Structure formats: structure tokens, C-alpha cells
Length: 356
Image 1 (cartoon, rainbow, N blue to C red):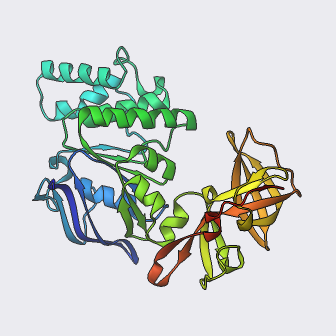
Image 2 (image 1 turned 90 degrees about the horizontal axis):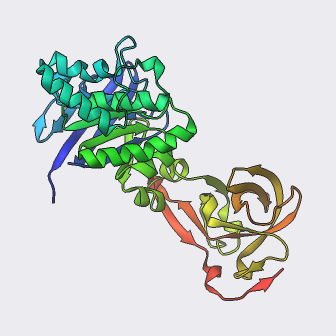
């Protein structure tokens, strides 16, 4: 097994009466791209800043490459940091922004020039070295910030909400670009985000934070398909909270008072459409319709419970007030001590099919 490259052991951090980090422990392998994912105030940025040395832990240990760094100043930890607002020097050119840390470290002029030109090529900004930040797009400024952080050849790269200030279309493009660049450079990286789609798309592993604690750590697939707590199942994906789930077909034996139903675990059928598992479907009425590009989101009332699911835009449109059939494939059911159990609908094991 590979040795951990970054490790946090029982980290605690208080801000007055607020506990930003509550017994935080996790490890990261060298070369991984990790997402710290959670809502605002969950403690993810505090973790990043403590690793960087911009904040001090009240207790616990932070190790990088096997060495405790709690008392090592930020400038001597060998870390590159990309801030949410880029923190570029407004009146310095792109070239001078990237070269800034190298000049402070007293690199030779020739070495600085070679390194800056190498990085301009890496981030696809060749020929723009003489421009100023205000002459660049948001995506280009982000690339400059990335290049500046990489300039001193750090062993660890930290990024705080790296795409937050960029418009949606460019943000999607930069996600792919960032992942490819980090793979090319081979640097261990940790980025903070509140965007679940961003974390799932970019990261090798996701660490989900909530109220200063770690809720779950795992691969994007594991976090999505095997949530370990009620918080994770409701934070990841597009959940419906279901009250008294035992009233629905196939789940009559459930004693739980509530469960979570994800939109991908629902099928919505229009009258006349083929249904394979007729014994499992419920009657519903369309209450709302929302166009989301490639999908249309419908809110359906089923046995007094509102649930939300989707149909592809190519499928027949459903009208508000229309009677439909709804199939629930599986539920995440709350258990004791914040645990979850996945319950599949047993009625979908039969082969009865009809057209209604």
C-alpha cells in the first residue's frame, strides 16, 4: 500500500464559539486529486488553509510527506495555492505574475524566463505574457493563477473554489482542463468546492464535510452510490425526502418514518407507454414542470407526497394536471445512528408488462 502523502490526525479548530474542525482525520496518497466537498460553513476551506499554513490548528497533527508541518511557516511548506479570486497582481503583466515567486526565491533570470515560458505553454497562454490581468477573460486569469502556483515546482497544490468566479460554460471547460493539467504535471492536489457535479467530475476521491466533521471519504462512484449518512444522501444527487415510505407499493413492510428517493430511481410514464413492472407502479398527478435543457423535471403528487423525477426532452411532454404512472425503484431508508439502508422494490423482479 502506498504511504500517505498528506495526513491530518485529530485536527480541531475553533473560531470563538464555532467549531470549524471537529476531530478531522484523513489521509491522501501521492498524486491524487482530492475534492473537499460541502455546503458553506462546513469547514472545508478551514481544512485547506490549515494544510497551507494560513491558519493554525488548535490541536492535532498535519503531516506532509511524513513530516509534521504544524510549526512550519506557509512559505516553507512547498505548497502552491490558488485563491478563489485568483489574487493576481493587477498592475503586473502575466509574465511578472507567474515569475513573482521565483524572483522572491532568487532564481536566476535565465531560469525564471525558461520556467515562465514553459508554464505559459502548459496553460495555453503562449504569446500573452505581456498582457495585464484586466485584459484577460476569467478563464485566462484562472490559468495564470494556476501557472503562478506551479512556478516554484511545489509538491502539493491547493485550490480554493477554483471555478467559483467563472461563468458556467467556461467553468465546465476548465474542469476538464484542470484535470488534464494536474495529470500531466503529476502533482498531489486538493480543491475545495460546494458543487457536487464539479467534485464528481474532477476528483479521484471526495471528502464530504458537514458542520466541521468528515461525513464520508471515497471515490465519486462510492460516494454517490453508497452514501453512509443521511446528510450525504441528501447533499449528493437530487433527492426527494419521503415521509412514511411504507405507503408505497413494494415498501409496505418498512417501519421507517422517512426515506430519501433520488430522481434517477423514479420512472414516470405517460398513458399508453410500455410499463414492464405494472405491479410496482403508483398513480400520480403532474403538479409542476421545469425545462432543464436535455431533461424536463416533473413534480408529481403520489399518495399525497410530492416527488420529483425527470424525462428526456425527446420523450412525450407531460402537462400539468395530467394523470401519470410512477415507478419507484429503490429508497435510501434512515436507520439508527444516522445510518442508511438501500431498499430495492421487490415488485420489479416480476416480468408482467402492459401498456396503459
